[in-house]
Length: 181
Image (cartoon, rainbow, N blue to C red; front, side, top):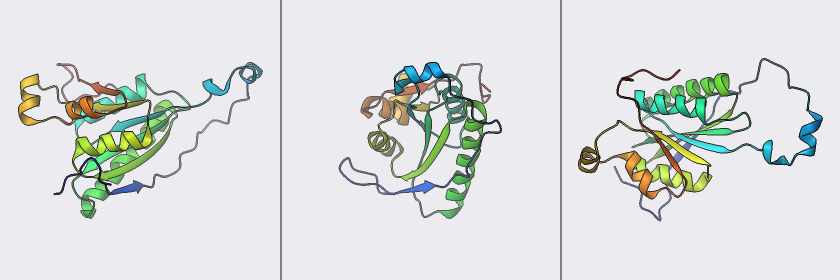
């Protein structure tokens, strides 16, 4: 596996998600909103780094529940060592579709998904640089400081190297593999 260098471009594949439509009709526009600036109606970009693990799902659930608003766009990013592995790509695409449907159902946010190839920490920071999101949300295993330094940690790398504010969701000690939803 060849890692991504800071100045190099990286490979990626856009994940085509099925379009989701709300079951309720569009609400009537409130005349008071017309007097306000457009700032309130503009959404933010929120990037969530995901994988197939329970800690990642916990971070996703936390972000959808506590961080996302109605007009936001959630960008799901999955780092993979090789885009050539079709089985892993298909499983990841299925995960992305499931998470997009859940995000729409819980917070009614738009979702975009991208699978990036390379060293997880570096490509997550590169993707955050490209998107310029309001926040980068990711989970962590909850290792101690010494274990993170010795074994390496994607969330710690992103904490020190991302230019966008990273939000690292640490699961509670009693959470285990449970999610917040």
